[in-house]
Image (cartoon, rainbow, N blue to C red):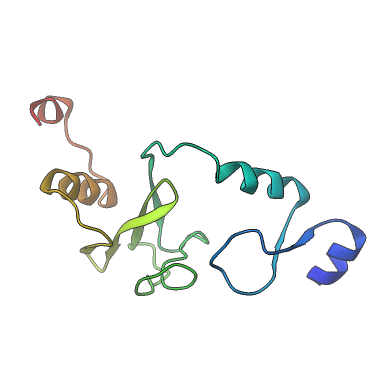
Length: 122
């Protein structure tokens, strides 16, 4: 089906993202967005994704143990790179983190935000 869509010009095939095996397909406008993303400055932006979300790529396309696609599991990405996961109530980190970062990451994964007065004390 993807090859037919490519032949009609609806999508493009190729290898757009390094490190992933197999041919990749994308909408024509996505190719430019992907190319511009590699030149973006890293801002440290944190994003939490639910385990049931299609962006749950840990253990599938990304390194690490697979995160089961369950509602209670979560993945924390920093600038598009997985840095921590919450699986069955346990938090795992994919890199060395300071105690302050561990606290922040865990709270983001648990969806609890520190009150402003507490955050100001840190």
